[in-house]
Length: 331
Image 1 (tube, one colour):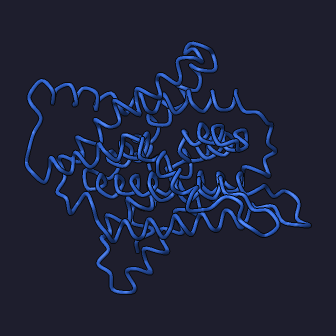
Image 2: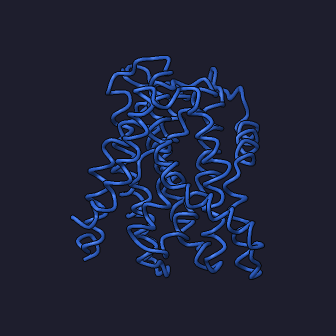
Image 3: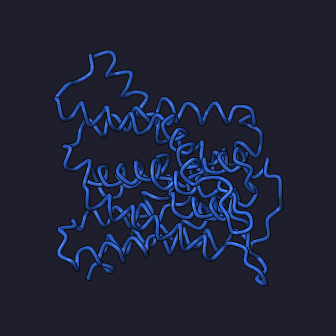
């Protein structure tokens, strides 16, 4: 356990430092979007390109692991919506828009800003391929499904806004994200054996090296900013269950789906499954709070789900990483 905490404590400590810096106004509120943009458009793409260009294509893209993650994500989305959607005679539920955003934070872990560096530190280089694959699925499939459901309008039993139209709009938003392009360019570089010119490679690697500490610091700052700008005060019964789904149900679903695949004879790698389960146990993606505000959802609820999952993940993720690393859950 001590070895696991030696890895996880610094990661979560950097998140805490970012939160404290934003709360104490050492980092101005107006600077947080710029810091987020630096990570999203510069540092993180360079880090993903570097990993993608260093991995064989078979290790980067494993169809079985991708299928397990996609099926698990859809199951978590469906479960979260069923459990949280408002129904006649049942108090405490929310509308479809908020239920869909709750499903998004329940099924979309913070793989980019936190997961890639953390799991590489814990598991080694083999974790890069599975975690990068999960990020691709979440950016394209998970977010598209949830945003399409969030935009759809149902009135009198009829769908007023086409799900296909909503999904197309969500896909256009995903197409503007630079991370899939960075992964694809890295895969092309690995497949062709091409390398960047010396000075260009050095710049890319310098930006990549800055991604981990700046991204973790930014998570904390984004969490503070999201909570500060939240339009509503959300009671715990509206956000805590979704945070618990993220931290406990999501990794359990991935574990079960993976073992069902193994039972059917699919050649699923044990190391790949370990990476997937730990990726599912990560806290919710912090940037979803920005999407919630943009799409008119209850960003206060979303911000508190993300905050709760991030705080609780220090204990739950560390414990799960230790259990998997010690082999307790693999016996």
